Amino acid sequence: MAEKKAFVLRINPDVLKELEAWAAEEFRSTNGQIEFLMQQALLARKKTAKKKTDS
Image 1: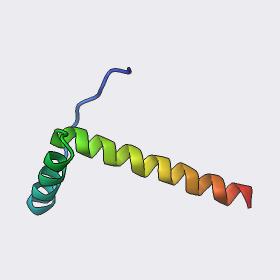
Image 2: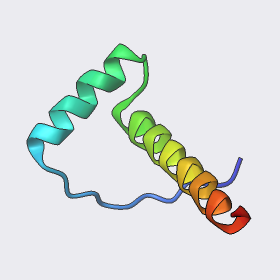
Image 3: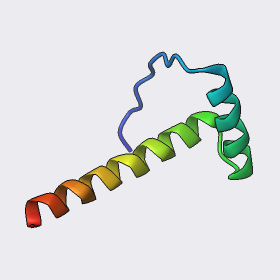
Image 4: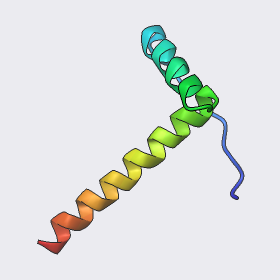
């Protein structure tokens, strides 16, 4: 696995609270949940871009 890069994330406290709860429900850390959601969003974006180029 590639080395992970740390960075500062400014986030609305209410959004963070929701993410923390969601992460706990899925047995992930908050950081893990954010990374998972970002990966899912990137995959969805790639699929959408591929569909646009295929049509």
